[in-house]
Amino acid sequence: MAAIKTYAVLENHNESNRNEPYSYFVFPSLRELRNCKELNEYSIVFSNVEQLQNTFTEQELLSVLEASNIQRETTGYFNSQGVYKEFHTIVAARAKKYKPVEKETKMQVNTPSAPMPTPTVAVDTPKPERNARAKYDPQAKIVITGSNPYREGSNRWHNFEALAKSATVTDALSAMKALTPGGNSVDIKLALAKGVIKLGD
Image 1 (cartoon, rainbow, N blue to C red):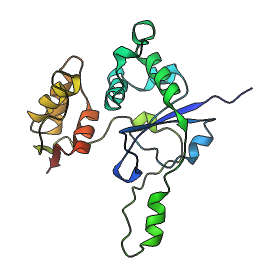
Image 2: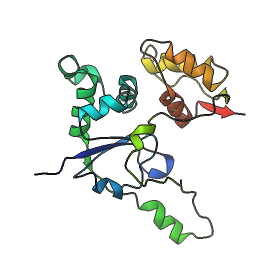
Image 3: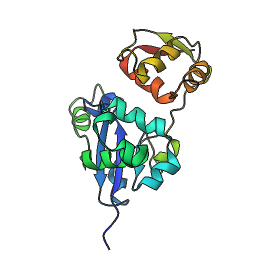
């Protein structure tokens, strides 16, 4: 009996040397997933549609597709399959065999006097999908450092507008959740990555 494929959607960080917001990978089995050292609390790991439904909200999955500039209207899957099946189909079509990033390690070896900071993420068991939502200090103040980077009228644009008018992380999450469709901590994460907000004390 063939092993069940496992898919991983990784949110790329600055040290990953990848240009896209997310990378899509496929592993021949759950055991092989242990070789992926880039898994963290933002990773989406699943083997089938049911696991997606049990672990993630539709909005979280749609946020990933939007950040990857995947236009759902052109996929042709939404009406017949729904968000979860659509996400599974899109990831399966885009996923590539995982290759670890090695450039960072070489730079550390060649320049021991100026070591690059490496994130310490303990991945003993492949359960990062249980902590999909980002954890931010609820009382952290939101400092706007740039203008709205999204297309006017899009869901992300409305989420950022609500975020920009909020004083703290708690206020922002409440304001974005009240929208239809609602936003979440992924919007805060993306805004931080784009450099248009900062979190203060």
